[in-house]
Image 1 (cartoon, rainbow, N blue to C red):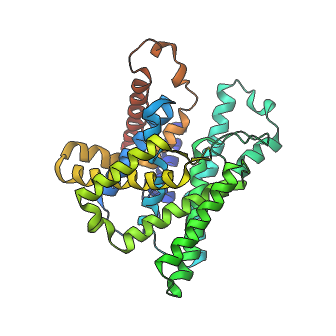
Image 2: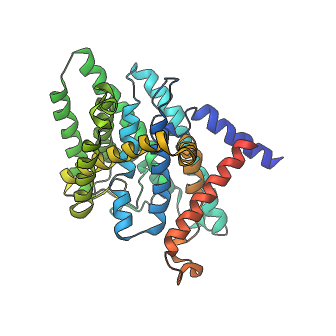
Image 3: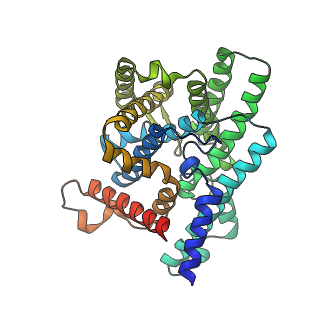
Length: 353
């Protein structure tokens, strides 16, 4: 009976809270019934890279992943975003993002308590737990005694990014304010967020990161408004330029939103957009020509929220230090593949029950 209840809860979570599946990670904002397959494929690629990036932990491969994987989700969220009355945006965003954040936070600490033999609540005071919940940081806060909330930081960050983007774009579009003024406003917003985060002045609810993320969302919003991916964005010469800029960013900059790492921030920002553009172009190619891969990646993209949740719950396995993988070639990569398969199989199980 308990198992049935858990499955039922997952179904409610999947169909009620997140009706557009991993729309939390990319196009939660769209009310359109028309899906763009390449967006699902791009999200599928990105969620796999999230899991592998969290598993390998270091090196060039990690740098290549972190350069663009989270910005991709924000950019695609902007691509499918539509302005609405502020009250409606707040209500729908709270239901689809803040409520899952609360659930994941509670599940996380129940698991912590379970795996630590009931020591979690004796080790951390209520004040520390509340502080951790309020700051919603993806990493521990150096100047305060608050640890990270894990990957759930993204939900809170996307919530505020949606609110900020909706607020400004509603004003800009109502008053016919042009793209160049918009660029100045959102660039200034990103600079402010980078300035605050770089100095480790972490704001509650990861608001400093949300300022940067909103700029990425605006890029996606403008790309959609001007049909960029329907025209010049589909050309291979643009994709090759994007690949070159992405490679430069990997080599000479560093970007990690949750950790507030912004090395060579302008290049990092350009590289994140370029990496996203190249990934989207590859996704279009897969959509048109590689049927089996298309099907699998689209499945991963459509169900990325469940995959995200399962990935969050396997955080307690010390993948990077498992003795069984110590002397195995590409051990961390193998562990990443295992984590992807684990999340995929559990997602299939939940969908079939």
